Length: 192
Image (cartoon, rainbow, N blue to C red):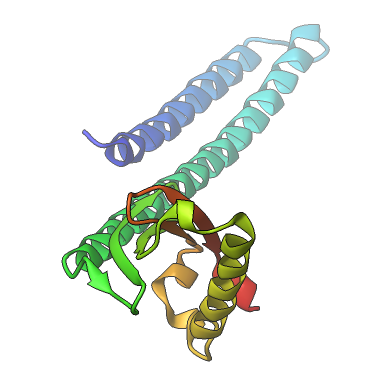
């Protein structure tokens, strides 16, 4: 049984129990008032008890309504996250069906995956890490980031699924021997 079904049946039960509780104690205090004389101290306590039961009943209605709304929002957020994960995994699977793929003379994208609100592209460059210096890697990284921003931050970037779901993108680059060269983060918030 799902959490949502349990909540939808449990909350009305709480509400019904609170109504029964209210009616039983209201009736009980009314019966005992009939047996009292004016001026008896118990009469005042019974009236205060009635007011207390009324306040308790009204508060229970608001508590049940608040809990129902809170749980409804929580369920919606849970479903949203689950949907987002499913969509992003499908996007990754769809891209991976077309890989590996050469995107220029030196670069091949060979896989993608989605994890923790991050979509990762993995690239292999046609170079050896031992053949280049760190300053060249830094320069290459800056060039790639500039090209990435100009290609992704177009007029319609807000229509993209990564923007809609606020997904961070990470581009990881490796050499021919699969030694890590650099990672370039990107988010569509950089386009704004």
